[in-house]
Each structure stands twice: as C-alpha cells, then as structure tokens.
Amino acid sequence: MSKVVEPRIQFASEVVIPKVQPEINAVLNEPVICPSCRATRELTFQARGKDAFVLCPCGHEWEDGYVTAIAVRQMTHLAYVGQPVFFPVGRMKVVVLPDFEDDLTLAPEPDRDRDDPVARDRFMWEAGCFTANHAKAMFTMCLRTARHLSSFAIAADGDLFARLHPAAGGAALDAHMATVLIALGLYDTARRADTAKPHDVRLSDVSARLAPERARVLADLRPALFLGSGHPCHLRLSDVTRMETASTSEWDRWRQAAVDILERNIEDIAGREYTYTPAREVRADPLADWLDDDLTWYIGELPPV
Image (cartoon, rainbow, N blue to C red; front, side):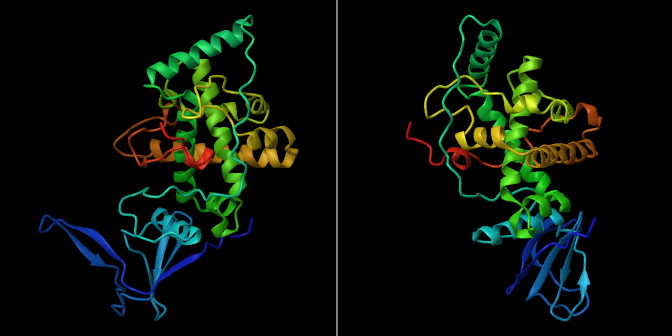
C-alpha cells in the first residue's frame, strides 16, 4: 500500500489558539510559534496519520500539542469547500463531509401490506419510536447519527480521509453511501433490538450487520413511516437507485468504508480513559463531539413548519 500524502494548509497570518496555563490557572490566546526561529506567520499545517506537524518558512518542523490531526483535517475541509477557515478548539467543530451534486428527491414511501404481520409490527415500532423521540422519525435520527460517526472517523483517520474526502483525492460519493449504509445498519439493528434510540445500539452489532454475507439485506430496507415533508424519514430516490444498480466493486467499497468508520469510532470511544467501555459494548455517544445539524444535507432546504 502506498503511503498516504495528505494536503497541507498554510496561513499567512498568525494562528491563535486558546492554551491552558496551569501555573496561573488561566487560558490565554497564544499564536502557534516556531520553537527554533520564533516565526508565527506563513506557517503550514499537515496531518499525517494520527499525528500533525507544523512547518515554518525557514523549513523547521515540529509538533504542537494543541495542533492535532483532527483539527488540521477540519481546517483542510473548510478550505476545500470555500468556507472561512478557523482553528477548531477542542475536537469536532466541523462536519467533515463534502457535499456533491445529487438529486435530493425522496423515494416514494413503500407500500405497506396491512395484512402482513412483519410489516405491521415494523410500522408499529416506527410509530412508537416517533412518539418516544418527541416527534422525530427513527430513520431521521439514524441519518444524523451516521453523519456524525462518519465525520469524526474521516477527520481522525488518515486512510479514511484519503479514501473519502476529495481534498485528499478521495470520493465524496463513497463517503455519502457509506454514511447511508451506517444509517440503515443503525435502523435495522435498533429494530431487531426493539429500541427507540440509535444511541442504545452497540456499534459492533451495526458493524456485524455490514459483514459481506449480511449487508445486502440493508439495501432492501425502506423505512416505512412518512409523516409529511417536514419529517423526512426514508431514503432519497438517488440512494435507492445506486444501491439497486451498484456493481460488486462499488458495493464492497461502500460497505468496507462503513465498517471502517464504525471501527474507528469504536476504537476512539473504547480508548477514552474516563469511559472504561469494552469495545463490544460501545454505543454512539450522543453528547460528545456533536454539532448542530439538520437534514438540509440530505433533502435540501427544510419546508416551513
């Protein structure tokens, strides 16, 4: 496997970061500064795998504890999509999933056979989820959860960034379809566990649903409950078409990317010192690194309520 060479991002002016100063019990805004020549301008940032490096105009290279690979990839994403670039203090401040041109039309709601006990049970489960989640459809919540799982993994992992982000030569469509498969996996796993919340689902169980011999079942799933355009809760027509017509290589690429995204999240959450969570038991954390988000990325502008 060839070594991934990630893009660099350069700043003409100083990059100021809030830094903790324990000796005075304060947080001070300080510029990133070269430890060799004291340069603070024309600095270049680059992520390499799980690490990040800063380069000054004189050629010095060093690591700064506040400049992480996750932060650099978020800034790289902002520059790529043409948004103002800022230093993301903390961890995730940006959804690192580029948009791409696509038809945002939702697929028609699948027919529901009222005499089919399986279809009836699933409809009743979805209706119960809608009530339990304060008028939020289950698949809507699964889409949002999947989007944030994908965003973190792409920012945290150099290989995923190279495969799935156009700034590094990756494919935005692959990132999108992997996210859709994760959402379907969350939905299917939650239904089988009879739970109303995606955050109650073990990510390892979702990953298992995406195993090669099992994942094709997800392509046939059609979340059934539709409550009007203000509560979209099923798939886009373009995503349905892609899953129905995908070649074996395309499907395997999307499926493997979805598995890798889940595994990167499992590794991160299980590795946190304050959680002590075995990898098998890891769930999506609804409180950590979550950003304000809506479904405009999936269906366009939401209609007025």
